[in-house]
Length: 384
Image 1 (spheres, one colour):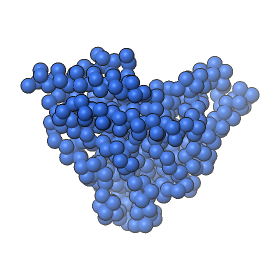
Image 2: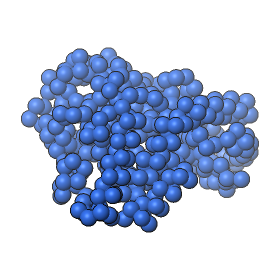
Image 3: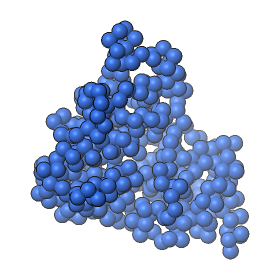
Image 4: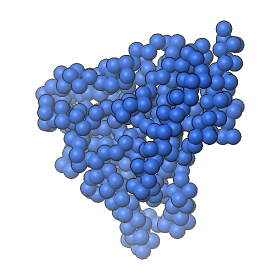
C-alpha cells in the first residue's frame, strides 16, 4: 500500500489537470505573443485562466501575474518592492519562520545595505502583534509575513496584521506568502490590507513550475527579470502555457469543491493525531487542531527516534512523510522553525511533518499509524 503524506511539499496533480496540460502541449502550442491564430487562441486561454484565478483570490484580472512558482513570486514582490521604494527607506521586516525563499531574499537584501528586523515567534509559532507594531518605523518600506507556516501550520492573522501595518504607517507595503494557505483557508483579497501575495500551483494539485503573484493596483515594483513585455511588463519570458492552463484547472476544482476538501483535511488531521496519541507513547504534537492552525499540516516528535531514520524506514513501508520543509530538508542543521519556537533539540531531531490532502483516506491513515507505531517501537529499541 502506498500512502503519500507529504502534501505540504507537493501534491499529486488531479486527473483533469494532467489532461489540461497534455491538451495544451498537443493543441495549444502556439506562442501567445504571436499575431497569427494559434498565438491569439493561446493568448485568449491565458486571459481566461487569469480571470478564473483572480476571481478565486478576490482581485482584479490586471492585478494577477503568472510566475514560475512560489519562490519567484516571493522574489519579485520582495526584491521588486525594495528596489522600487528604497528612496523612501531601507528598513524591512519579516519573521524568523519564513520559507527560505523569503528568508534568504531578506538576507541578500541585508547584505546590500537594507536594515532587516526579524520578528520572534512564541512556542505555538505565532508572532506578537505588539512587537510587530513596535518594529514599524517611518522608513519601513516592507513587511513580509507568511500566512500559513509550511512546517507547523500556524496561521498568522493577516487581516489584523494588515490593518495594524497600515495604521502605523500607511506607506509600508505588506507582502504575504500564501503558498501553504491558498486552497486550504478561505480568504478574499479585497477584504485584506495586503499589497502583494504569492501562490503556487503544485501545492493545490496543479503542475510544478507555475505560480502566481497578486500585486495591488498602484503598487510600485521593479521587475527583477527584464526582456519582452510579458505579464504586463512585470515578468519577462514566454508564458508557461501548459502550466498556466493546468494551474487554472486545479483552481477551478478548488472553486467547486473547497468546502468539502477543507472538511476532509480537518477530519484526517484530527483523526491522525487522535490515533497516534492513542497508539504511541511519548509523542509531542507541535501543530494544533484549533482554527489557528492549517487543516493539512501536522508536525510531531517521536521521542527516542531520529527523524531521518524514521522517514526512510516508513518509506520502506510505502509511507511518504517529511522531516521539514522540502526546500531545506537536505541541508544540515535543525529546523529553523522549531528552533524559533524554542523546541528542545532532542524533539527537533525526532520530528516529522505529516501533511494530508483531500485525496487521502481514513484507511490510509489507519495503515500509516500502524506502520509508524511499528517503526517507532523498533527504532526506540535499537537506539536505547
